[in-house]
Amino acid sequence: MTDQPDLRASDADREAVAKRLHRAGADGRLDPDELEERLERCYAAKTFGELDALTADLGPDRPDGPASAAPAPAGGAGAPAPWGGWRLRWGSWAGTSVLLVGIWAITCIASGELLYFWPIWPIGFWALGNVAAGLTGWGQGGQGRGRR
Image (cartoon, rainbow, N blue to C red; front, side):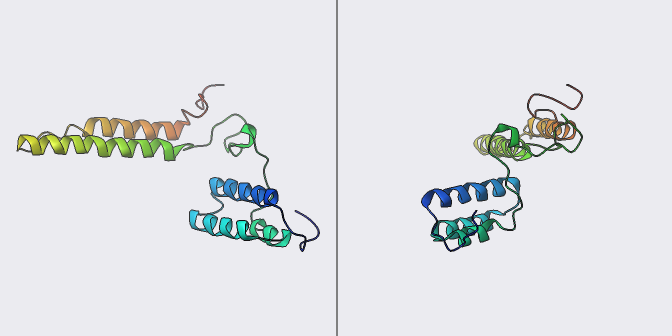
């Protein structure tokens, strides 16, 4: 940040470092606990030296903006990174799966008998779709690996 680590930092300086820490967390460079701990230290920091110590091991900063939101693809120019968006894809699958199994369980309890486990079909086919999407890169910016 500065060549004079003893200079006092402003709120804007702390906010800039906090944004950088959040980006590092989103990139996977910091786990959630470490991010929280560094953010606490960031907002308590009084000097540039204290702020610099929080980001010294993170490497060069990347600029904000849509062009830098994702790392460069490993498969060459224009190819999406495999398994991109997997948290959203699998998180929505898991939430819906729990809901479907809950509906099935409630109908079993209400009828008093063990019914056919119908949720296996939407859960299974959605899981297969997620795996196929992850392998092909489909669903990342509307392009698959075979399209340009």
